[in-house]
Image (cartoon, rainbow, N blue to C red):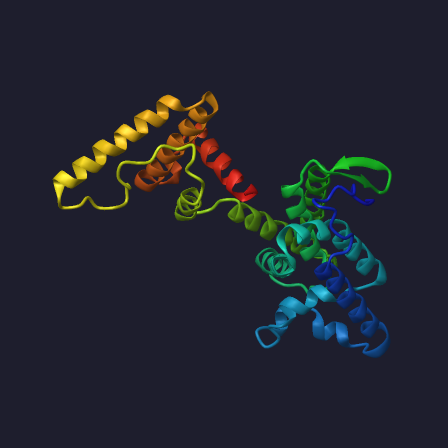
Length: 298
C-alpha cells in the first residue's frame, strides 16, 4: 500500500498527535524488548492461561510486537489510515476506538480459538482500516505500491484473506492470530454502525434544535397534555391553524418541499414510537437516514 491522496478536510497534519503517540510508544516498547529487557514480551503479551491475574495484558499486548517487520507493517497501516480518522473524531475518541478494536481482537480470538498468546497491534490497526473504509470507501490506495484500489475493496480482500488463513491455520499451531485481526474488524464495524444509528430521542432532540423558518408551527406539541381549559385551547388551535395556512400559501416550491420532508420525518418518528423501528418500510428508513446524515453534517 502507498500513501492516500492529500485531500483531508481542511488539510490536517499528516501525522496527528494520538497517532504519533501510539507509534512512539510501540517503537519505545520494541527498543526495550530487544535491548533492555529480553523477557518483556511475556509480560506484555496477552496469555489466556495467565488470566484473570494479568488482566492488563488485554491492553498492553497491542503495543508490543514479535519482530521489526511486524512492527513496521502495523505502524505503516496506522500511519496511512489513522490521521484522517483522528482529525475527524478528535484524539480522545480515536484512542478509545483504537483500544476498543484491540480488545475486540482479544474477545474474538478467545471465542473462536479458545486460547493462543496475542502480541501486536494488528487487531487495533485492522479496526482503524475498517472504520476508514466505512467512512471514506471510495478513496484510493496503491496496493503493494503498484495496483490502484479502492479502500473498501482492499479491506474486503484483507478480511477474506485473514478468514481463509484463520480457518486453514486452526489447529496447526500457527503463531499468527488471524481471528484476532477479524475481531478488530468486527469491533470497528459494530462501533461504526452504532454511531451511525442515533436513538429516536436523540433524533427528536436534534430536529427540535433546527431553525423553524421554513416550517409552519404545530398547533399543540404532540407529547404535551392538553390544558384543562378547553375554550383557551380551542382558541390557540384556531389561531395556529390560521397562521399555518397563511404561511403554507406563501411558501416557495423549495420551502414546500422542505415542509413536506419535515412532515414525513414526523410521521416516521411517530411510527417508530408506536410500532418500533422494525416496522419501517425501505422508503421510511431512507427518510430517517437522510435526516440523520444532515444532522451529523451540521
